[in-house]
Amino acid sequence: MLSQIIYALPFLAEGFAVTLWVSLLVVVLSLIAGVLMGVGLVYGPAPLRWAVRIFSDTIRGIPILVLIFFVYYGLPAVGLHLESFWAAVLALTLFKTAQVVEYLRGAVGSIPKGQSEAAMAIGLTFRQRLAYVIFPQAFRRFLPPWINGVTDAVKGSALVSLLGITDLMQAINQVIGRTYEAMPLYILGALVYFAVNYALSLASRRLERRFSFIRE
Amino acid sequence: MGYILNFNLIWRHFDKLWGGLLLSLELAVISIAIGIVIGLVLAVWYVSAGRAVRTIIAGYVEFIRNVPLILLVYLVFYGLPTVVDIAYSAQTSFIATLSLYSGAYLVEVFRSGLEAVPRGQLDAGKAIGLTPWQRLLHVRLPTMLRITLPALSNTFISLFKDTSVASVISVPELTYGAQWINFNTFRIVEVYLVVTAMYLLTGYTLLFALRLVERRFKAAR
Image 1: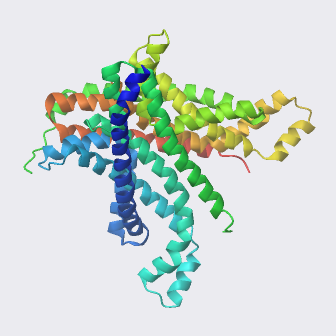
Image 2: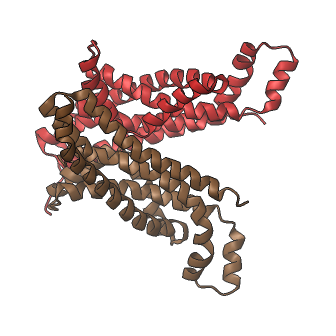
């Protein structure tokens, strides 16, 4: 049993690399899209605000699995052909973007209105207000939930196995298909996911404590 | 492009979606009911226990929270029966998994709720001569439940969405129904549009209803 698992380790490691790669792509892309859309939600004109609100509430209201299937099976049906890997990344990114939008809204919303008004009074432009006044203060509110949310991205990435992408989850299932050692391999997989996510949530907690000295 | 929407086949197989939705709700309700029991028992135990018990409970919570749900579902359905001599249906297996899953999240919810019960209330309970057991039953738990109600309803709604993962072990809930129609009729866009609407309508109706309940039971000031 042990020799079979050791034999499969390089294969599992490749799967783990895919898991990390998917998670990284999703986290980075959703951060960019989410911050842009979040700014649109807070400061944009009414139609833009409504569009972002509807996007966010719709995406967060459906299971991520449905979104993955919708993107993966739905896009080719309307003539858009994406590789399964990128379809999965797109679906997970849409989901994460909606979360980032909410983190940003919460963080920016926690900054007293007077800050914005003071910045306006000294003649800062909109971009300067965001860059020098709002974002630096909102950052400490944004960071802990966001890092905590990164664990969701890593966990969510396991769903790409359903599209036949050989991530850690799929690699485990394939090795089980060959060796029939279900329990040891699932536990091994669980421990790997646990190690990554627990480290992330510890980091999030430490940051939260580090920023907690700042009085509101 | 040139994709023409045609919902006829969806309506013909709508019973798969409707039955699926009801099953999704059933799975979520049963799982949260068991999860609440797990969460309550472990949270009450945690706040009064020594270090060893605390470590074990925290271990359970952290393990569940940091592992993908789909892996837990596989582990319980495909993994456990290979080492323990028990047999269960996919549905039972999923309910067990989702109960343990929600239990872990609810331990945290209830634990922080218990800690948020004002000290004065417990002292008042002590002052009028309630036993520790009575203080728990009549003072701590009711106040704690009021405090944690919003978190509880959020957990329920996210569990309702998590039931979609049951489709990977062929439990015929809503996402499974969607996939069935997807693979058998190829009305792909239509079926996912309908299913999206069903999840949204159900989810937001639940949210709205639960917010009404919360307002009714809001912690008195």
